[in-house]
Length: 227
Ligand SMILES: Nc1ncnc2c1ncn2[C@@H]1O[C@H](COP(=O)(O)OP(=O)(O)OP(=O)(O)O)[C@@H](O)[C@H]1O
Ligand SMILES: [Mg+2]
Image 1 (cartoon, rainbow, N blue to C red):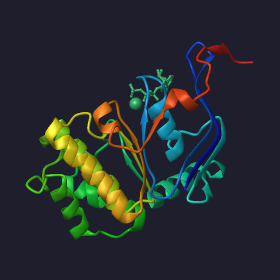
Image 2 (cartoon, rainbow, N blue to C red; image 1 turned 120 degrees about the vertical axis):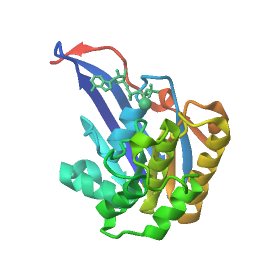
Image 3 (cartoon, rainbow, N blue to C red; image 1 turned 30 degrees about the vertical axis):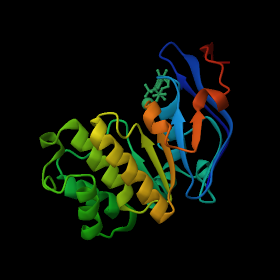
Image 4 (cartoon, helix red, strand yellow; image 1 turned 90 degrees about the vertical axis):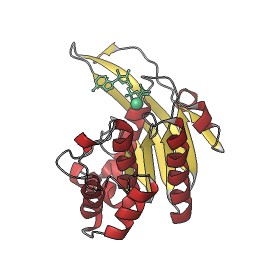
């Protein structure tokens, strides 16, 4: 369902040098498979998820999602595939501040399919424990509550692949397990493949497949002058 081949990404620094972050010869995820991605801060986990999602274009290499080679598409094409096939819980949430919790979840559906499934949006918000906060805007929600809206929004459209970047980093331990269970149960019930970044060994320990980025990222982390 997800195939990454020979993916490379470097960032250009202001002094003109190039800072390589990713060189991933191969990474695969089967349909409905669940894996956790761990690794040191600054190692490139978010950059890797952004490359998979087509938010960032890699310098070279191939990303294939549900048999579509997204690295061959234009930015608009990648946006369409992302809307139709991907759910993404951003490390920084990226909720729309002018819209309520319920509207944020329903807007995610509109971008993807043009349909508003009010019942599913409400059900998901109830399941993340925000049934009493449907009409609050992000500014009137706690950080952990905002993160829970982001989880509901990412699941709303029944994606084929869910990418989550530390989805419980700002949530207290009791609610953390509820959110992890919700994400995993929803993915299992609906056949959604899941790649979850986490710094929590407690969360990682619950997964059969735990990938450490440094084990398959072959980048040599030294800035070099552009040839
Ligand atoms: N736009 C950019 N320009 C230059 N360097 C960048 C840019 N974005 C990210 N980096 C560098 O790329 C590296 C990887 O960043 P990334 O956000 O992917 O790490 P991460 O593994 O997600 O870390 P964390 O666990 O702290 O979230 C970092 O060292 C960062 O400084
Ligand atoms: Mg990160």
